[in-house]
Length: 244
Length: 223
Image 1 (cartoon, each protein chain N blue to C red):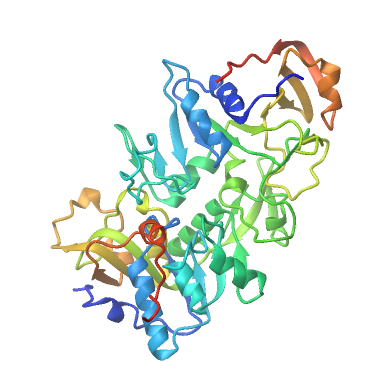
Image 2 (image 1 turned 90 degrees about the horizontal axis):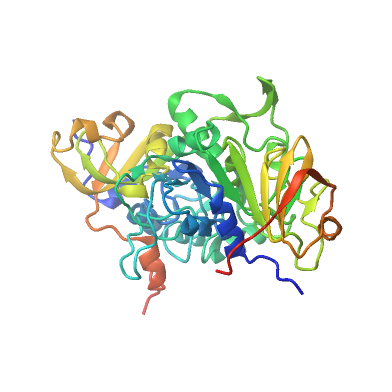
């Protein structure tokens, strides 16, 4: 078994129009910037994929990563909890112009819907959002005297994930708070593609330290020294860079 | 004219109620300042939604690691005892009743404990983040808020007019003028600035202030 992939272009080659794509990260922390940029490269070269439904906690910041994916016109709908950031201009303009749809989900509900999708649980009840606008139209039940809102699982065709170490079997570790949504999204997608800072031999990761077991991963591509969204934004980077 | 408390002073007052050993989530903005005012000898463990328990203070400029941030996307640090976990575990801590204290900001708080703090109406881009989760599960759900709006209208009201974050969830209010508990659908005045009479405060409050024994002075250092 060897899940390693030779390069980023190969890693994103299977993503087609209209797919639901989960993208890991919380803001820039744990965001797979290089995989996202490879997807933009393919769109610029071929016109595909487009009309994507993207699941992420946020809606991009500045003009790199998820914001650049939206700016390229590849995203039809975003499912997220917090579409604001230091520089949310790309999403904000498209949303207010009616060019992109938004499904707003409380952050903990988003995480649990993704977990449920990966765990084979079609629906669950949560106290979150009861009595608010975000619970409208959803079934409510009373358990032990409290009211709970029914939420449905969330699954994806593809997850794009950033991890730290990975082996050819797909076992993964993460780096600090870069973990966030990434392990959940690995579970919830039919195909999970992971960029790792280093591919190591099986056995190099202590079995006690594996965070995502390889069963949840289909492809691993090595991206040494990955870029950080915050650093790119401080340098006022734009992706793709404007031609000279 | 007597000064109301500053946000820093409200944060100081809220910090005095956090017990040694408490697990605490502080909302983005003013509530984050509570961490700075932990009384000596007490150790609280701070939780952030994006998967850290027991994080430390901000690093020096230039020493940031952008995989190590808080819910407000600001750089933090690790310290002995820090733990990382994924988002589903993080919100299990929130909803599952494992946090002792959550402290949030507010646009409006009703005497029923209803909170509105995520949306000022249908204009613009809606964003909720973790607020709707954080108001459920913590043993104490407190808000830090000015007692009135910038144009002098009460923020403590009978019923919220703005979109709700949660129903019947707030248990304590640290306002710029008073400390108020919410008990059985009533505002109960616990502390007030000495310069204000109960009737002064009532005039600035949109629902009845109930008294349950003596009202203490809200005594906060200048900071």
